[in-house]
Length: 194
Image 1: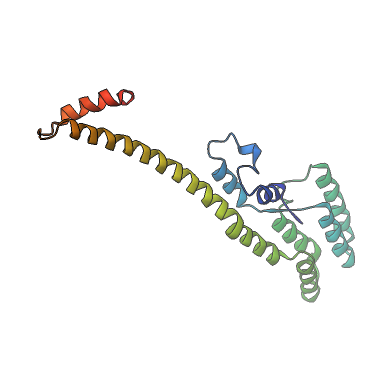
Image 2: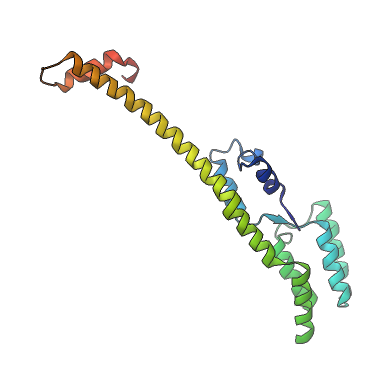
């Protein structure tokens, strides 16, 4: 099993958005990528089918060897079902196929061999670590950058408004502050607001 291409690209680019050109025009590319991330960061490769076929052959499951050989050909051709090629489903289906009608002891040996050949716990831990320490900080950085841009824009707007008020107060020293005059003054100083 290997990491999906977008995972490798995101780590290299240190950006989820840059690693996902398919979604760059999507209004919310980062969230769209995260919704698809939930499935898995890992995908099957042809070698995984060879390992599965070897396990089936070891436990004398000839019909399943043929089935998985055909499945591998479909996978390489790109015709395999997307569900069947999800790593966790592939491993569970392999365990079920290999165990078949075997006795309890043989089933335990088969499951142990599959677990040894496909270390799911390691995959889950790796996905978790990548999510926590690589992708979530990237995601949070993106949100922080957007928040900072909004805050800078708001700050500039507030500075303009403060300058208008200060200018108005300097011109009307001692007068009672009339809000209507302040609005008129702001319209003269900053006509684009109107």
